[in-house]
Image (tube, rainbow, N blue to C red):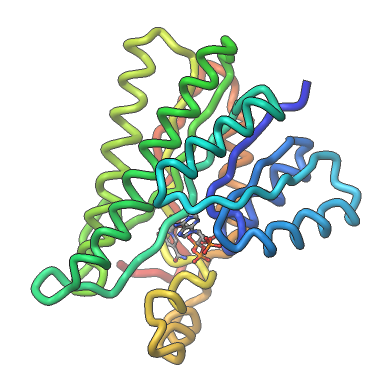
Length: 251
Ligand code: NJP
């Protein structure tokens, strides 16, 4: 039977690279995002490359709980359920603590924290009802989830990623209390060259470009390789967190 993986935020950057790598490894991947047309394009690319798995695009705004619940219900109807859940969708807004807009903070909480928690709960329930004992929940965290950089625009984002660190370890503990063999892992990258900084500095694309030109950054594929490594670890190995920075990154 095909293993089914859900990748949130599969339309760009790290999520697209992870979805591609999982399809290359023969999995049935449901990729979700708002810009579903980009996932449709990636799916066609995977198909014409002759990869052994499939990528199924699904339009979902993960800041809306009802949309997440409908997606899990559709996955159950069409593909039985989820065996692997990659919580990747995430964003940063340039809203400092002393002057930022509540709306920007709320968007970061909704996507970076609440959506991760809702997808985790739904993925666990899906695995539990089908007695999946090799399930895996992987959170794409950040080095910002482990230390606070002296940069006011990143402080609230950092707080949401500290939450992801706590959620991943809390999940691991709850799974052990339930005597479940499902594993929980966080992958924490430093600077990765994606559209992320262009969305953060939407009014100043030159600043975003300069960020990515300042050092040789990680690529989405580097994170995807870590996901494949985590999934291929033998059942008795529980990888808690992978920290990975570009070699040239100082902070
Ligand atoms: O960012 P980007 P990355 N509903 O902007 C989706 C973490 N990270 O790949 O809906 C559904 O290229 C969005 O889809 P769309 C970061 O915190 C990054 O770099 O179509 N999906 C797109 O597919 C995040 O957790 C760096 O706009 C939503 C994807 O998220 C993860 O890596 C460093 C959504 C974002 O693609 C992926 O970020 C680090 C919603 N409401 C951690 N909102 C880095 N790049 O340097 C967004 O430490 N998405």
